[in-house]
Length: 393
Image (cartoon, rainbow, N blue to C red; front, side, top):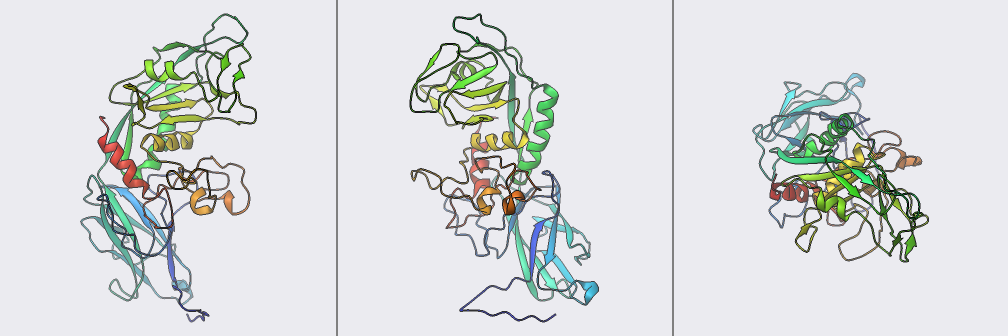
């Protein structure tokens, strides 16, 4: 196959590309790929392994298998006279190609990789693409990070948040609708999203022993995110920036766990504030010697919301926020929106934003594996694993 390309100064000609091998819900077998840029990452400053590769990077756990897909961009398919393509690993002890056994790619371009020896940080190697034979001319490459599994223990709470709906009214029970079965289902998806970072969430049986008197409605946490004091319909005054969550996360805790408290809803008294699905306080957020860390989830929140809040708990910031201290938000491009740590669950978006790698209307779940100098909130795998390893789980 011949093609012509007009080039001004210089341009990288890409013959093939690596992509997620399927669309749809997050999967253990089909990881997302961090394909932001083709230049080598800078040398790590904190001990992380830089991605010295001209291509995307994906993560996986040791002794597990994943499927990746190669697409031909400027090459005909073999059936149409195009060249045969082969893949191989530069280090089989880190990641090995187990299917196809001889490395020759099938018509659909998929191949299966098994993770070998990982580490607490990561082991890194390249997967390369060759023309004609497994040792033929090199035309593409991607990187793989292989991790030892780090377990984070989780303790869920299904609390009775007693409250009143009228001024001076009686306190009545407010138990959330979330169940143990629902929590189990949510964490199945959560663990699919986080496996590429080698992080696994092990969930205790839900705790139903807590009962807390709230200032708002039964079953609700109330906040006032605005700059002026506001009255709750039951007569309680909430000052600017106040909420009534302290009795929830200070008094209902299990040691050496990520504590998660399920409630009916989070009500923001500020007009136009929208719906709050969940909160997270990362595990450094301790005030006055009292632990604040943990996650508040509402009945309406989904598994992607939970995976996102767990990212905050593991110290990650929103992907659309600029560098620390800059203030505000400045990005909503596809490279940011497709990430797990984008600040909205972007259902209903149109055009190119309707599919961020998992299907129309589904939130992205990419946790970044590269460190690009012009991107902020990067190298998320490293920060999350560092925090998980430091935790007393």
